[in-house]
Image 1 (cartoon, rainbow, N blue to C red):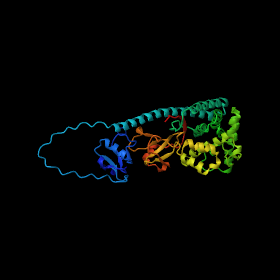
Image 2: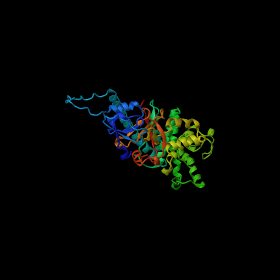
Image 3: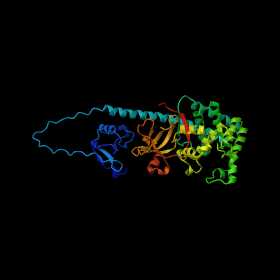
Length: 432
């Protein structure tokens, strides 16, 4: 809001539905989610009046209506004698307002607890990233030790994943910067394990899927960087070399002692159910069911994390492309489960909320994907007072649409700082 637009004040009695107001109060001094918003209900007006403000700032430009008119004051009567001074008592705190403020404080405590959980998730992600980085670096020099470390990592992830708790998948903050190749392998593993859980596969099936996901691209170490890092389209010869990484991966995995079931999934992780994949253009009935899952999540991560980040799709766009235009390429069972547990707006998606605020989806609960947690840009707050809203508990607030980085105002882009690379990890989710 421009300064000129906010230099307008009204009396609380002039409030009505449709006015866009801005409270000159600290975030914890009022019970509303935002310090500036469009009034949508009589209950909001009642609460605003209880704040005891003498005047309220409002925006004519963002309002749908004009403030209510106030009747002019009566002419001053002739004073024949001095009135007795009246000492006004301090107004009693309004119980309803206090209850709303207490509920807001409780939400803040809940957010602080979630932040502790997220910090633990970030730590676990960093530890997993180190293991995956070593897999890529040591698979050819210390193959047996590398497979053992990978098996241990998958086991730890499964212990967390297969607990009785709901699972939330989080967007990581990217502190553990490094080689994109191992972030890709870790991303694919996290998504594949989560999807295996949602499909109710056995622990052994998910273990095989997890190992195959961690090792699926080890054959790419044989592909020259000039081809791997090429951002424009590959020619036929270059594509033929890339397609060999599946077989090279099987050979490296065999030397390392990976079991046959894992090797089969690695061999087929680029096969598509409509026969357009590689290296053998297999039809769906010839592709291992676990390989169909790996092909699905591998495709999704490749869309969202291209070598040239400017060409990457948003998570929302990636899912929409796969579901709306490439459905024949994927096994419909894991595809439907994938969309169901990631939601329409997966972590990393930039969104506009129904109150016209900008946000970044940071977490999705796999069992309640349509109500994600969103980091919201509020120009009234500093980064230290950032708001993460759990849309499950925000009555009347939802996501209107997905947007691109280029559609964000500069201050919103700086505040939300969307990542050039999407990295995910999961944790047990709090009960509702």
